[in-house]
Image 1 (cartoon, rainbow, N blue to C red):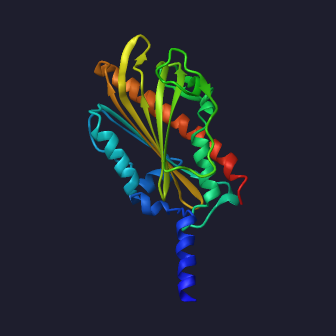
Image 2 (cartoon, rainbow, N blue to C red):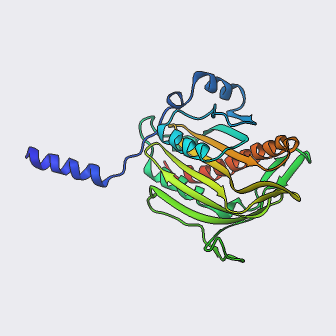
Image 3 (tube, helix red, strand yellow):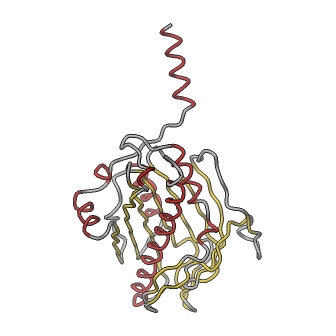
Amino acid sequence: MKRKSFLFLFTFFLTVPFVFSVPPENLLTPVTIARLNSSGNFIYETRFSNTSPVLIPSDNDLRKVIAEVSDSLSYNIMVETLYLHKKPEQSCTSSETWDNIQKTGLYNQLLAISTLEGIQYYSASRGTMRTFFEYSRVIDQPNARNPAPLSDPVFNTPPQSFSLYARQKDLTFGDNIYQYSFRTVRDGIFFIQENITSLTYGVIPAVGKGNLRSVFAVFDCGDTLLIYSASFVKSLSVSSLNERISVSFSNRAEAVIKWFADRADTVLSKTE
């Protein structure tokens, strides 16, 4: 009887995916939490040298990803953003478990590349809101002259790793191809964005091929989502333009976080 019970439990643990939520206090320092509480739950940091991130949550899997990205690029601009998003009340989970339906829904929202089309961000140089992505589609052939658009992928269960290519035209850096690499781990969902084509700032070469790496991470904290992003840029521009580029990246990061938070609420409001 004991042997049967053991075999049942062993099989159960192998076949049922477990996901976990983590209290913010386990991921962030008291100083960072205090900054979030005093600034409307959104903070950012900008650095103009190859220095270590300062807002990164204390998650081993995320730190490995960030180390992989930062070690592979001699960046001269780093922009970090951190946001604590309150979940709809009916979707709050315990501090020990992350509902698998919620995690799958959030994962698919990150894959919804087409829904980035038309989102707005604040343009500091113009002092007004501006369209971020004029065009945003998953594509099949990143090296084709006119790559065919594909539907946004949808999964019933998030894979451990998955990659796609996207063609995205924005009004600051033009029409470009990006690779998005997604990872799921026990406590979070990550993606890494890398530019496959060179970015220009108007007519000025700004970022060479492969010299932009952005990491986006989502953690479930029971009644909130902790969202972290970090962009590492090796800029080709003169130093006088680097500050304008960094401000652009921080405002654009805020726009993507808001996009995801809004999309997340559509998923979470349907789960109880």
